[in-house]
Image 1: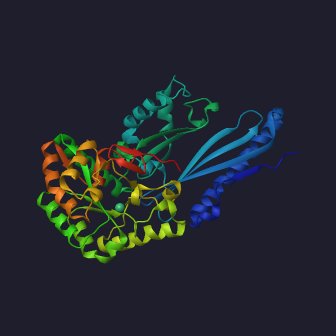
Image 2 (image 1 turned 120 degrees about the vertical axis):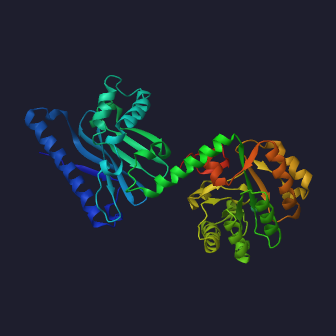
Image 3 (image 1 turned 60 degrees about the vertical axis):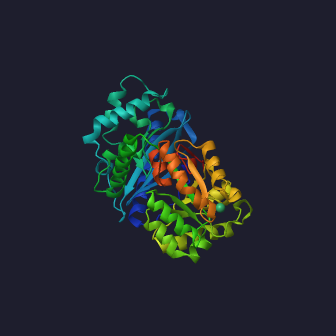
Length: 418
Ligand code: NI
């Protein structure tokens, strides 16, 4: 008598709206079930049925990835057929916008990059003590004929399950990840024209920045725009050819949309600092969301771009705040304390205290003395070998973007676990 197979899944097929995708995944799940039944029958007839577990089960865990128009669903399957340890298996589906299944060989150019891929994978796998050291090279080459690969805007990952032969069955599933920049040459530009182009641009910019030998920092201005002081600051920045980053209050952006547009047109980065400067530690979820969303709306209206960075007022946030938005939380490591000093010399002295390459410097463009500080500051720092870039450029330069969501400086982007 065969026991019923228990199937558990954290994956709800109902969440998939495209019928083509849905049926392909369902067919695959059914075929797995069938195979388990076959294995059980086979074991029974071979007389090894005593090895079978009384509660055969299949457990599906699912992860989703997206890059440009390609969506991927990665499944980890735990199969319990025998009394000994479970077996693990993985399967990935890649779909285009229309729900058409695309093979991995089309998405990444494996054949042309076999050498690069196998050497990178070998290097990482060799450091994993679960991996058989023996014929790793051969196993990787075999694996690359039909690898399980996932990717998004920041990473590209390779999954080795028991079928890959790089490790014993007991090792379970091994994942190897690389920053997408490292493997951008492998992506098929036909499917990923934007990311390939974007990363190339960043790499070129980075090369230029590196070869100049400068120390890069970012000037940031909070709480504006101000009716007169912000335009004056913009003039100073323009005259000195400096690009800065503005963290706007939605309430002020709403009052002076033409100044917001000037900031954007001047090549500066325009981001969000909430609507009315509340402390997010004391806000209901509903109010906090409104603070962020309403500010997004007015900034988008003026710049045609939705803010990707958020600076919580007072730098105050917690896990709950991070859940509100997928924006990068951008703090600072150099505090001019300009709101308190209202004095050029003191502002300058405060910046000197903790400034280093990669620093994010905090100012407020709503105070007269703050604006007065900027030109002498630019001259002083340039004299010491510093150069000014936007926050985005700073994080790209220091690879901060790919490291995490909470940044206090270009060199220090902490990863925040969900
Ligand atoms: Ni503020």
